[in-house]
Amino acid sequence: MSDPNPTPTPTPAPTPQTSPRAQWPINKKYITELDLAEHICAAAQRAPYVQPLAAEDVDATAVQNLTDKITAAEDLIFQATGGKAGRKILTQTEQGFRDTLLAQVQAIQKRAKRKYTSSDDPNRDKYFLHHSHNLEGNHAMLLTAADSIAKTLPTDKLPGVKATTATDLQKAADDFRGGLQAQSGGGGDTGKAFKALDAAIAEIATLRRDFQLAADTIWPAGIPANAPIRAEFKLPPDRSLK
Image (cartoon, rainbow, N blue to C red; front, side, top):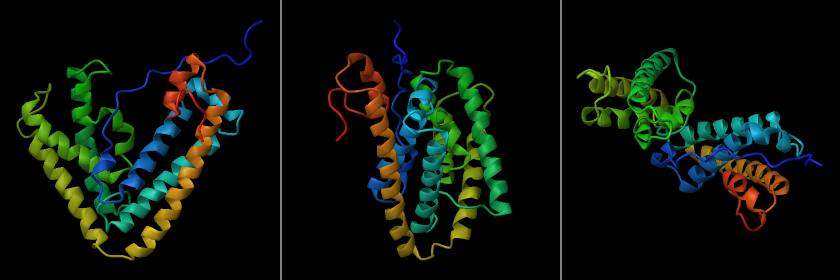
């Protein structure tokens, strides 16, 4: 008789990346939790895991709820750091700067794909290709990517890249950064933002842990076939989550 709930074949784990949030001037515990929660959300959306998790009430609605809370926490980080990290609602001028910068980064990323054709090539990390889906909505990450790519281009020849590409990219990044700083004014009630951020991170941690406990239930510890799946959900292979 076939197993009614067969263990899915896990998706190979991607090469670990340095979090673009690592450069944010904020308590590292916030960054660690946001990165972990984002990772767990991504794992929960992988096709082999969607149906088993939904049976444990970790469905698309739950994933979207946690994703929205991560975004809201980044808004609070923007407020708490005086506009130096996180997200914010853009003015029309800032939107124009952002769109120009994003278009330049994406064009360079496409050229990087032409040179580094394998999705597993570590050279793709230099062009933030593993974070492409995060660049549009995360201003700090977009700026981090642009600054890094601008420094990489002079020593890494990509097809179609001109001598002025790096300087044009850096100017676009500086224009966008200047717009954000002008609007943030470096002020605001950062104390209230930090207090709200503490509560937001605590709620994210609770929701993230619930996702992990659901995975812990579906794919128990101590079963070799479950070990790679548990690794995707940051669960130990040989013991249940405490």
